[in-house]
Length: 433
Image (tube, rainbow, N blue to C red; front, side, top):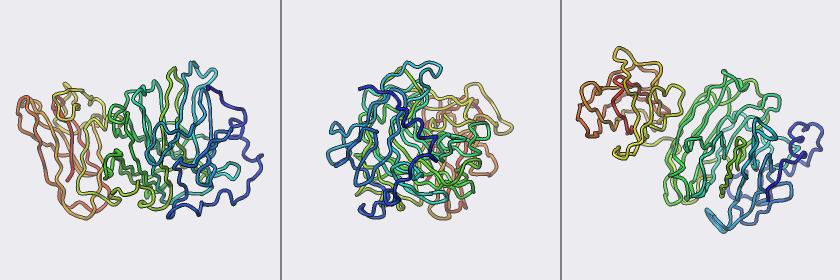
């Protein structure tokens, strides 16, 4: 049944100081959970109360609703493990210009650092934490016409209300992406936002996808935002985001955080639903990854990237993404008619993150198509090094893989950058080994 945002939940966000404190024992880590987990939601013996709060494994997780939400449902229709999962749903919303709503949401908070709301009550500022969960997007899911978030980690500050520091989103083109934001938190030009496409709706729909997020929120240079993913049919996770640096907001308080999943979106005349299961939140990778699977937390010897995965980055244009069934991956990037042979352009760049498990050398590869001598080069560099021109053989309409060696890379996180030099060159994918 379609319902609308209750005054109770809307006002509670702004009247924290007036609400009664609930006993601190409610918010302590659940010591009955396996391992060192702070939270484990498997939906097996779970329930949802009239306030949309989720109760599972002895912990109550606050529910927050706005707009044309449908109450969460514990359902057997889909499940990652066991018999149940949690269905989140938003009905079509015909609001215009924010009247009566400018957004819809139905979410449950794992962490909401306030003693006035049920859930965990931890100050995780500058703490390394781990979050694992599984999501199922139905086959009839329609790409949103506005912003859409299904999981987020956020500094909570009512006076500023910043965008999430880390969010998993669906964009209007049907890309599944990870959004990272840091800066002041004032939702202005001081906020640095990067977006990494990690898949498409067509590759996610009708499948359970497992995620692990490792994060540390701080305004220092030691912040962490790493994401791994895999299909439920796979046994090994793939690292898709590997960021180190500032992850926090300087203008926000550093004692309150939100970690929440469900649906949070702009108001739009589209109905959406998805399923979430096997949520694990704690202090160690082995506790939050799906059981009996493999994940390399501290680096891997092989990375591969679709060139188009960088399309949401601010410096990407005039690179464009072209869908072409004859390309090895089905897409490629190029900057048609653009030339920058004297130096690398400021705009028309793409960045891809990787990690070295130990100090050593690496081989970087690119799958490219160089039609002729006027489209047979591009720029590349590693980290803050100098740009170098990469010349490749012109092979007409044949795709090829070209490689170069990079020596003396330190252990830890690195970034490979590419830029157009002769913009008609087509780049399908890249790899680091």
